[in-house]
Image 1 (tube, rainbow, N blue to C red):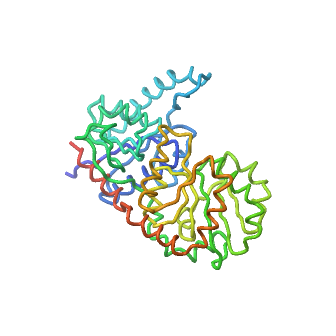
Image 2 (cartoon, rainbow, N blue to C red):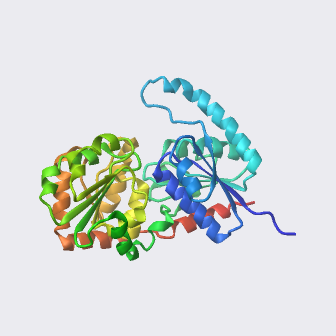
Image 3 (tube, helix red, strand yellow):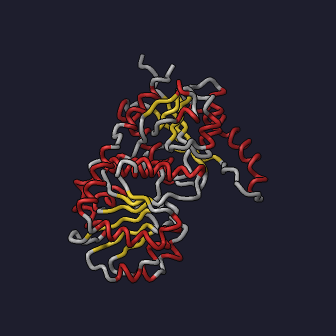
Length: 368
């Protein structure tokens, strides 16, 4: 009689920084054992509800959001949402009967991991950042292991539970440099020009958008540079009408769906400093200018960025300085081939390419 297949629930999401690592872990699990059954649980209306099915996995969405930092009417619904999500998480876990539950952070992670742990199902957390998120800190005593990407995480989690694995990244960015010709064709770019890629996350980043918009005259005079600008879903209607977006050398779009091809043709990346972004930059050995978001807990994006800057693997520009300095510094850096090569080489040295596989093995080690 054949043993029943292992079942894993992966919970969490809310941003690409949570979702893409989660999918990478799922892919690594399937690579180890194709019979493993994987089910995702995310938050309704968030990016995981689109990206997870596209990756070939089933998903349930919970009615859950975070507690707002300011006093708002939404906060009145928060206790109701938590209770509702805990009840639905219990029904999902009871029906699917997982052997292990994985939490990757984000609001939807808490109800599923908490319920599973209370039912005696072993659970594991994956913390992407150098500063632990609120949900993962709340769950630290309920789980067996915590996979982290940075040193000195004992201040957030019990030392004996910590496993230093690095952050998993999406499979499609592996070996991106072999896709250069395909990338130029896909985006309609000129292989003979230097290429800047500006990425502000799936929703967009106001400061990065304002910085590019302010550089219209500078870019207008640069015939040897082209820009792929991810404006973001929140800003596409406004910034899409900017005169900078109308320059023939600048292509603005709401979302860059083929990040593997974007990396393939990038001479320089400009982006925030989320943990997954940092991991991807290192994996592909990408020269980058990082503009850490000021709107995150404990300024953890600056800490993420400094892990590269301290090793001369990236350039940091503060959010407050970006509008005046970002594009001028980017154009200056593009003209310095030696510096670009050094940033690329040093970032590659910081990569942990097997993170997803290592985490997958840790997950499977928790099976009873």
